[in-house]
Amino acid sequence: MHYDTLSIPEATRLQQALREKLVIQPRDFPLQVVGGADISFNRFSTTVYAGIVLLSFPALQPLTYSLVKKEVHFPYVPGYLAFREVPALMEAWEQLPLKPDVLVVDGHGIAHPRRMGIAAHFGALSGQASIGCAKKRLFGTYTEPGPERGAYTPLLHKEEVIGSVLRTKAHVKPVFVSPGHRMDVQDSLSLILQCCGRYRLPEPTRLAHAAVNRFRLGELPEGITQIPADH
Image (cartoon, rainbow, N blue to C red):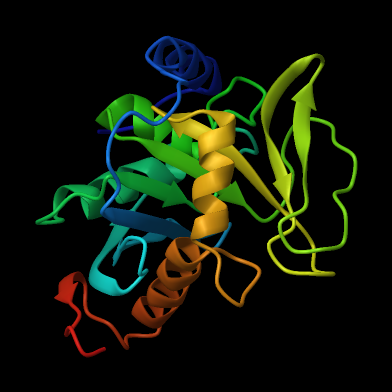
C-alpha cells in the first residue's frame, strides 16, 4: 500500500471509494480478543511508529504487542492523517499471528467530514471490525455529557448520529467514539464502556499508546512480543 505519491484530490477520491465499502451495523460476531491501535509521529518527520496490542475480553489481559516503524512521505494534512497512519498500521496488523475480533483505534471512525477517519479507513481496507476512540473532536456537534462516568451524548452531523461523546471517568474530558466498520454507534459505545478501567482512555488504546511510546524510546523491540500469562 503506497500513498506517498497521492495528491489530495486523489486521496479524496480514494476516501469516497472506500466509504462505499463501509458496513455500519450491530455487532454480529462473538468477542474474545479485542485489539487496541495507536500511531505516533512527529508532524515534521517522515518516521511513523505504529502499535497494536491484543487483550483478552472481557478480562482485558494483554496478550501480544505488534510494533512497526515505517517511513511515510504523505504530507501532514488534517482530515487525511489516515494516509500517513494506515500503511504502518496495516504492517503491524499483518504481522499479528492472531487477529482480534475488533480493533479499537486511537482516532475516529465515521466521525469525519467524509466518514473516513483512520478506524473507518482501516476497516474498509482490511474488512476488520473497527471502532474509533479519539481524544479530541474532529467533526460533528454535541452537547457536553453529564459529569459522571458513563454519561454520554450523541455526536451529530445535521440530523445524523455519527458517534458518541462519552465520559469514561468522572469529571474528566470525554472521548469521542464512532464506529469504523462492522459496528454501529450503540455497540461501539457499549464496547468502549466495557473496555474502560481507571483511566480516561479505554484499556486497548491506552496500552497501545504506552507500547508505542516505549517502542520509540527503544524499550520494546520492533515485531511481535508475546506477553507472559502471569503479566
